[in-house]
Structures are given as C-alpha cells and as structure tokens.
Length: 131
Image (cartoon, rainbow, N blue to C red; front, side, top):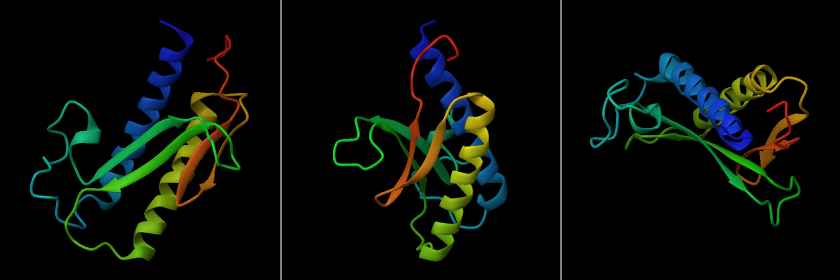
C-alpha cells in the first residue's frame, strides 16, 4: 500500500466515524430525502442516512490556506434546516475532525479552519514515512 493510499484510508475511516456520530446525534431530526436510503443500508456511509461527510483534495489556488482537503457536511433532506442549526452541526463536525486528525496522524501539524464557506484540512500533508 502506498503512503497516499494509507493517508486516504485513514482519512476515510475518520470521516466515517464523524458521519456515524452525527447520525447518532441528529439522524432522526429531519426526514431523509425520498431517494436516500436509511442509515446503515449502503456499503459506504456517504450514501445513506441524513449525512454525507466528505473531504476532497484541492490545490488551493485562490485560497489563503493553500492546498488541502475541503471538508463538507451535507444533509440529505428536502426540509429546510435553519442556518444556525446547520452552522452548529458543521462546527461540531469540524471539532470532531480536529480531534480525530490528532489521533489518526499524530505529530503532524494539521489544522481545520474556515476557508470560504466551508472548512479546509491544511498543514503538513506530506506523505513521509509517518503516514
């Protein structure tokens, strides 16, 4: 397995854990989108339940934070989620991400900060032997 594959595997496991925590706390609060399967029925938690928690790499052009992973928390519902509740859930997810990154990648200077209207994982993204 390459260093990049190990990095992505660790990050994916962390995102799945965050998804699970959000589902436990808020999963029944809003009805699912009619085309969205209930939690636990898809092989990947990104494809079922109320939440879709993802991170995708960006080179960071036009960003003060530079390269990193855009972190997103999407909610699969047709119901209007009040902006203050959505912001609280996103902040909670970012906090879980910060804690999880410290455990998944110990000794790395990885940060999670607002970048535009979302969050970005940035800092030491090197794929050295510690990855």
